[in-house]
Length: 196
Image 1: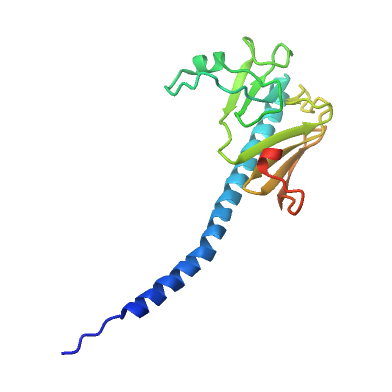
Image 2: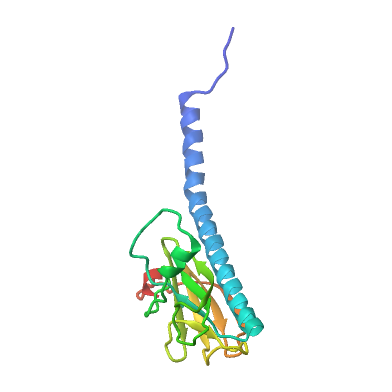
């Protein structure tokens, strides 16, 4: 009785062909995941900015979206909303990697404190992601006035992840639009997400 099977040479050829295919396919899968993560991040911030503008119009009060100061306690236990709100502050610099705060600025002092109503706390960015806000006047926050307009802040939120960038443009009237992903500059002047 003659047994049929694969020779060692045939198995080695199949394994080498499969590994070559995986070598070319896996980087594309990772770039798709990074592009999807970047798109979700941009959609989240578009939703947050639109909600902030809507709340400012509804309540006839200014609403701030500001970078969150880094949590220095590094506490992991679940805390109540009151405990979380007590330790939150807007960062004084344009550092959005620690997340963001969205609140109604009842007393118009441009910072989150006792009388202000916290609307949302946005989680810190994932590793390898960057976010910067550049606007007229170099203010590190986005502020919607009681009439829904920004406080003379034409600006751009620039998101970066794995070599691709997306931008949300905010104009004085509070209108937003997102520009599609663009590759970062390559060549002599390389730019990475940490350069933003």
